[in-house]
Amino acid sequence: MLTAALLGGFLLDWWPVVPVFAVVLFLGAAFGPRYGPVLRFYAAVVRPRLGPPAHLEDPRPPRFAATVGVIFLGAATVAFAAGGDAVGWALTLIVAGLAGLAATTGICVGCEIWLLIARRRHVELVA
Image 1: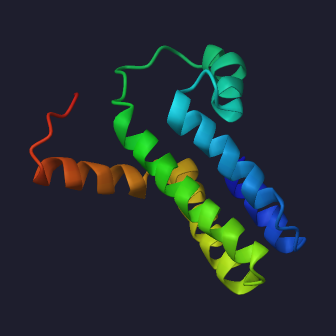
Image 2 (image 1 turned 30 degrees about the vertical axis):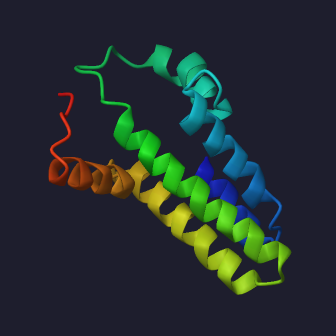
C-alpha cells in the first residue's frame, strides 16, 4: 500500500501524498499497531484470514525501519515545501523502493540495519 501510494504520487506529480504517509508511518512507529491506520487494517482484515504465526517477531526492528521511513518522508516534505522537488522525490522513491522490497521479498533493510546496530551494541535480541 505504501509503495503503491508513493509511486502513484510520483507518477501523478502529487507530492501531498508524502506527508500523509509520513503521518501514517509515524502513528504506527510511535504508538504501535493500534494507532497506525495501515497496521489496524492488516490486523482487522488480513491477519484473521492467515494461519497463526509460527513465532512472534520482535517489534523493535520494524519500528526502527518505520522511523527511518518517517525521517525520509519528513525530509522529503520539507524539500517539497522549499521547492526542491527532485530531492523530495528522490527521498520518497527510496522509501517506496525499500517498502516494495520488504513487501515482495520479506527483506526489510531497516530491520537488518537495526539488527546490525543491536549486535554491535550487544543489545539482547528477542527470538
